[in-house]
Amino acid sequence: IGRKAAIKVLRREFSEDAGLVSRFMNEARAAAAIGHPNIVDVVDVGNLPDNTPYMMMEFLVGEDLSKRLAKGRIPLETAIQIALQAGSAIVAAHEKGIVHRDLKPENLFLVPDPTTPGRDRVKVLDFGIAKLRGDLTGGSVKTKTGSLLGTPQYMSPEQCRGIPDGIDHRSDIYSFGIILYEMMCGAPPFVSEGLGDILLMHLTQLPDPPTMRNPDLPEWMEKILLKSLEKNSSDRFSSMAEFMAALESPMQASMLTPVMRQLDRTPGPVRVSALAAARPGTWAPVPDMRMTGVPQGTLSPVASNATPVTYVPIPRRGLAVGGAVTATAVVLLLVYLLFGRGRGNETAVVPSPPVTQ
Image (cartoon, rainbow, N blue to C red; front, side, top):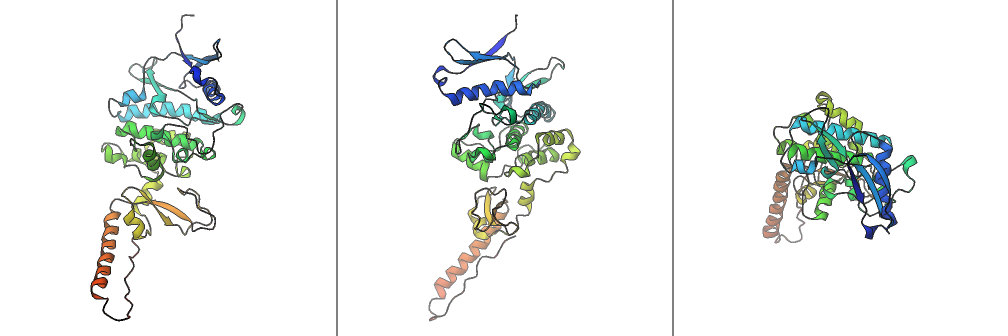
């Protein structure tokens, strides 16, 4: 009929893997179920004569967001427009019980908007590893505990742990927050050549404040970014719709109080040993007397009979205080060792490092 189409074909050597074939078909099933203008349109799916699966999609002319980001930071207004369009597609997916699980710049494709010259229309791609729920679960991929699905730089902490049952729509919120952070700041919050390093950063390290990387960024946008990047999924936006509402309303966003930065300003009683051992901008485990049993939202499992533990960020200014107190204790110990040994059986008491606020 004279219409161009894009055809995706699964590599022949993978066509015998039932899991990969199922994941490939997930993309067609998920995209068709959502039916949103900001999601790539799948027009056909089937098998070639040699039984290799194929998918036929609308042909898009433009560039993906990663190529746009290679040119530098994206202006605030443009970044918000891109985010609102892509976010509306993810809202629709979540309403259908579909979690994307692989949101990244390469999966956000920008095409010229035919209705508004000079602006982009966003198309969300690749629901191939989407987690389907409800009526769409038939034939979907069963992810084994310990397996990692996603792209490391954009994976949520719960994805990094490899526990599939802990992944829900809030994982997409985290990944989307990283994409937005990259658009605003020019780079993702966590970058490393090693896979293990990146996973550890997602689990334990605080992102740099966005205004540190882009001083022109308004405070309300920083709050949105930090809220979306909370380590504990329960501290993030409760839904993608709430995330998008904050983007549309700076006044509403200015009322946000990200837990991450609240703790950064008032870390509470942290033992000097934990403080001195931690690097600035990382998280340290401390007893949390407010909790009982196994605490919700801890960054590592805690046995039911163990002291509840929570993780608090170590502020950059706190390390100097911790180091000074520890140094004082070391000096006192040296004084005792040099001058206090010749006093018979007397017991020397070396003061323990005090608790630091």
